Image 1: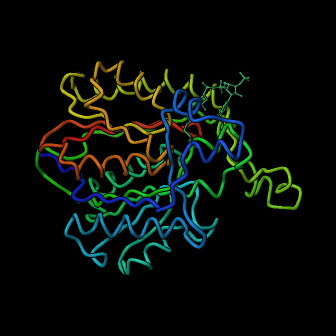
Image 2 (image 1 turned 120 degrees about the vertical axis):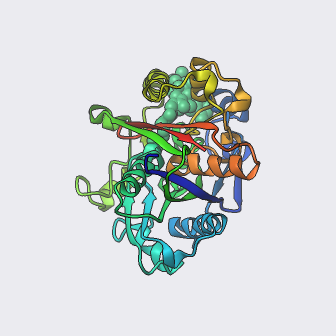
Length: 327
Ligand code: ACO
């Protein structure tokens, strides 16, 4: 039996504060009808004053550790996938490590925008398969609301805050992570970016005035690339594992746009009952969207032992990634 990694616990946490589409109608020239039709989103959660990314990570991680029956002090590695960490330095993973009391764990952040959770899953999987670590915590967490221009209707209606976490360990059975697939095209980096605040444009009065610290997105161009790319990605992922679309029990896609999700499901011939969708409640929570959806699916008992589950995501970078898991 090959050595594999396996998810043994999931958890998620969403901040309490809800912003409905009707609330956004008061901020920008938009409508519930436009947002619902073009994206599928009805509401999103946002943090309150004093709440930050590491706080969301901590709650989601505690829930995942509890589900796994593991103590924080047993963890060997913590990875936080995020593009909206507490601060540029140190890593949010370090703040989480302290909060959890995970004294023996190494900790780092990983940024692949909305594909971050699957990139992190691939890193964790390879550390475990290679025998370096046996108990890994992976979190996808975002506080996008602090990087949104609430006067820009093209972005502020799309994103939300939240965190999802998984605990992984090694296994020798048939189940576990079968494969991960990572891709990028940096030529299109400016399709989705936060141009200011880094070394290229360090924060000055001018960069702040110009709003360079906000998320910018060329939505329609991104949409077209996403649909085409994801259709190929999901088919390639099944082929790599010799699995037919009909053998797939569940698709857990990144939650950016319902039209992108349904196009991917259609390509796989999957009925929507087999697709995890929660973007109507949370919007696009970037690297948190897949682990939040996975946690909901697990807690709703929608997965059976040995079910084939596919994760897929597309986002800034541009990056795209998938994973096939035998549950
Ligand atoms: N309310 C009302 N009208 C709006 C809004 C709004 N909130 N936003 C844009 N519009 C208008 C535009 O101004 C445009 O008007 P015009 O025709 O008069 O110029 C019209 O609606 C159509 O705009 P499009 O951008 O072409 O609309 P589209 O149907 O493409 O939907 C959306 C936009 C929802 C952003 C879609 O393109 C999308 O989901 N893109 C992909 C996003 C994605 O997958 N990103 C990757 C992950 S994110 C990450 O990695 C951080």
